[in-house]
Amino acid sequence: MTTEQIILFSLFGGVFAMLLWGRFRYDLVAFSALLIGVVLQVVPTSEAFSGFGHPATIIVALVLVVSAGLVRSGAVFMITRSFVDSTRSLGSHIAFMGGIGAVLSAFMNNVAALALLMPVDVQAANKAGRAARLSLMPLSFCTILGGMVTLIGTPPNIIIASFRQDKLGESFGMFDFAPVGGIVAAAGVAFVALAGWRLIPGAKGEGALAEVRKTAQDYVAQLTVPDGSKLIGQRLFDLYDDAEKNDVAIIGLTRDGARKYGLQRNTVLQAGDAIVLEAQPEALDEFRAALSLEFTDKDEQERIGIASEGLSVIEAVVPETARIVGKTARRLGLAWRRRAVLLGISRQGRSITREVRQTVVQPGDILLILTPEGDETAVSDWLGVLPLADRGLVVTDYKKVWLAIGIFVAAVALAALGLVYLPVALGCVVVAYVLFGILPVAEIYDHIEWPVVVLLGSMIPLGAALDAAGGTALIANSLVGFGEGWPTWALLTLLMLVTMTLSDVLNNTATAIVAAPVAVQMAESVNANPDPFLMAVAIAASCAFLTPIGHKNNTLILGPGGYTFNDYWRMGLPLEILVVALSVPCILVFWPL
Image (cartoon, rainbow, N blue to C red):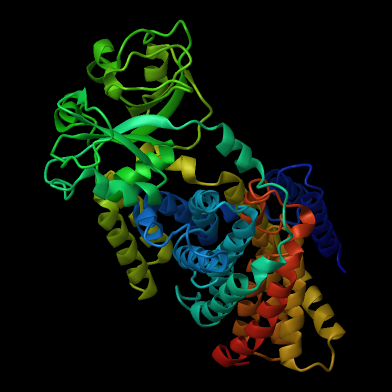
C-alpha cells in the first residue's frame, strides 16, 4: 500500500472505531476525520468541503423539509387514520401499519415516517391493552424496508445514484430501485407481519412511554362546529365512533357561550356549537382534522387574525403568581391582547363545568394555548405561566392537505420523467410549501437533521479521496481474491454480506459511501456490469436489522419499546437472510451481469 492509502485507511478505521465506541457524536467524528485528511494532504484543499454541495447532501436535507410539510398539512394523518384500528389482531395491525409505513417511507424520509407513525402505533397498543414493543420493532423494520423502493426513500439510494452519476455519467432514476427494492420490501413486510413479530421476546413492561401515559393528564377542551360543516344536523351521539377512534372523550356541549347540562347525546348540532372534550393535545388535533372542526368560532378567528398564519401549541403550568390566576381567558383578554386562544385546561381531580374560556384558572392548572408561530415565549411570559418541555406539538392545517399532496406528486412525477433535476424539484416543493403557508418559513431549518448533513458532507470527500488513491480498488481486489474462482453471483452475494455487516454496526450512510466504489471496482475486475453490484450495495446498506445502532429507526424505538441490544437480532437475522436470498436472484433478473 502507498503512504496515502495507509493514511486514508487509518482515517476510515478510526472513524469506524469511534462510531462503534459511541463516545462522540458521529458528525463530530466524521468532520474531524475530514480536517485531519486535509491537514495530512490526502484530501485536496479545493475538495475539502465539496461534500456539502453534493447532490446527495442537498437531497437528504430537502427530503426532511418536504416530509415535515406533508406532516404539517395533515396529508400523512389523512392516510393513517383510515387504517388504524385497535380491535385488529396483532398480526393484522402490524400488516396494516407496516404496509402504511413502507409506502410512506418510499416517498418521504424513513426516519420521518417512523417518527410520525410511532405515536399512532403506541396509541393503538394502549387501546388494545398490549405491549407496544410487540409492534414497534416490526414498524421500524417495515419503514426501513420501504425506503429501498425509490431514490428518495433512504440516503444510501441517493448516494448510490449520485456515485453512478459521477462514475458512469448517468444517475439511477426515481423508480429504478423499485423492481428489486419493491419485491424485497413486500416480502420483508410479509415476513414481519406473519412470523417476525413472534420472535420478539416478551417484556415485563412497555418501556418509557408506559410511564408517560400513566402520568399524563387529559385536557378539558372544546372544538367549534363551523358554518357549512357536514356535522350540522347530526346528533352529538353520531360523533362518538370518530371520538373513540381518535382517543377522545366527548363530555358535553356548549351553545351560545353556555355549557349545556348533561352529556347532550341526542342534541342536534348547529353551526357555532362547541363540543366539549377530554383528550391529549395530539388526539385533540387529530379529532379536529378528522371532522374539520375549528379551535374557536369565526368571529374570534377574525378578531385575533391568526387564521392564515402558522400556528403553534404550547403547554404551560400556572404558578400562584401568574397574571391569569383567578381570571378567565376572556376576562383577561387573551384573544385580543395577545392573539392567542385557550384551547384546554388540565385540572387533576377537579371537574370543569363551564365553557373553557370562561373557566376561572387556578394555580396548578396546566393550560393548552394556541398562539401565532413565534409568539410562544411572549405569550407565556405575559401570562406568567411556566412552559412545559416542548413535545413538538403542531397544528395540522387540514384545509391544505390536497394542495400539499398535489405539489409533491407533481414534483416527483417531473423528476421521474427526467424533466426536472431531482434536487431542483424538491427545492421547488419547499418553496411552494412556504409560499402557500403549508410550512412556516421559520421552521424550515428546524426540520433538517444537521448532524446527518455534516456526516455526508464530511464523508463524501474522504470517500472520493480513497477512491482516487486506489484504496477502493484494493478492497475490491481483496474480495475478488478471497472469492477467486467463484461465480459472479457468489461475488455479488459476498459484497452484500460484507456491506450488510458494516451497516449493522455503522451508520448506513457511511457504509454506502465506502461500499459504492468497491462495488464498481469489483464489477470491473470480473468484466461485469457495475449496476447489479451498485444495486446490491443499495439494498445491503439499507438492511441494518441486527442492532439498534445500524439505523436511526432502530435507535428511535429502543427506549419506547423497552428493548435491549440483543432483542434486535432475533427478528433481524432471519430477515437479513431473507433479504439476501431474495435480492440476489432479483438483481440478476432485473440488472443482468
